[in-house]
Structures are given as C-alpha cells and as structure tokens.
Image (cartoon, rainbow, N blue to C red; front, side):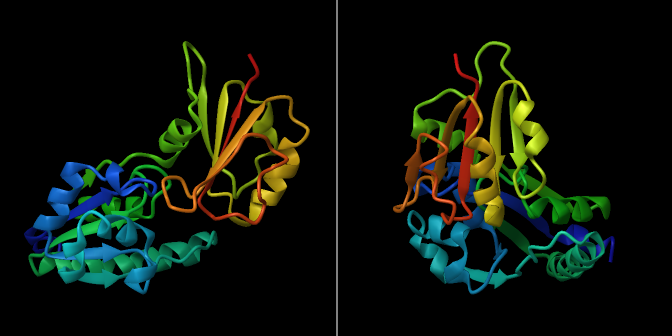
Length: 233
C-alpha cells in the first residue's frame, strides 16, 4: 500500500474565509485538474468551502465529490481513531491513481483538519501539496480596516475554545479563533480589559457582521467569529 499511495496526488486547498473573490487562481486550477473533491462535511451543500467555490466556479457541481466529515471532539484517542479511518479512505483513493482536492476554508495550515491527513500521506511517501488560502484573521483585519502588527508588535493567534484567561496579559495583538460555544465566556473576559476589541462574524459572506467593542459582540453569533484585541496606543 505504501507504494500504491504514490500513484495519486493530494491537494490541500484553502479557499479563503468566505468572499469567493479571495479564492486564488492556483486553487481554482488545482480543483479543475483534480478527479475528486474531498469535502470535510456532508451533505456537500452544507460545506462552507464548497459553497464559497461554487459562486465563482459553478462547474464544481459536475465534479465528483466525496464528503468525509471530521468529528469536532477533543478526546485524543477518539480523534486519532477517527483521523485514521478517514486517512484509510483517502489512501485507498490515492492508490487508485486519483488526484484529490481537499477543500478547506481559510488556509490549510491554520487550525485545519487537513493537516492531519497531509502528515499521514507524506509519511507513507505519498504526494501531497498545500495550496495556500487567505487566512480568516487577515481578511478580518482588512474588513475592520486595521493593522494586526506594526514595527516590533507581536501577533498571537489563539484557539479560543480552550482556556484563554492567561492570554489576556500577553503583549501585542491577540487573535481569538474558533471560539464556538466559548464565545460568551471570551466576551465576558474581554469586557474588563483595557484594550481595543474588535470582532467579525462570517467574514466576506453576505451575513458578515462587524463589532468594534466587546460589549456589542453577539455571544450567539456564528462559529466563524474572529475576535481581535489590540493594545491601546
């Protein structure tokens, strides 16, 4: 099987945070050249990455797609078991000589489920290539019209679904991603912080919403809410 996996190729393609015009030319080319598109959710119409691409590449509806949902769990053993099953399915497709395009929102190197599969494929000598996409926090900064870092200012990208209390004292700009159900807690923590607080929900999508202080953030807003905290000048 380790030899057979080299017959195919896997692309990990970032399609940006939501605005279809931010999908790169290279991403489109690799999708067109692929035999099968791998979507990390089902049905495909519910996949955010698929819906983004469909707006500028309607022919995607004629492409063969396979939905392989990734579990949103933190238990290490269960997560590893799930990733192994997903990898075996993708490995079988590669062994058949297929070129696969794994679509993911944002960039595949930033808190993406694709990273687990990429490491497993390359570990067995398979061909895998990452196609960069616009990271959500960069698009958020653009929507807000702010700079994330100037001069020697540090930039911290933080998964907010974990304990973030101690990060509030870090210097520089703090970017909180993937808050999920913890957004209300993060909002409460930030309400007493002497800093500039911003947030954008559904960046680049039709229902995008911008917040310019902690108090106004909708704690029940989308999972796709990025919070930015900057030190006051």
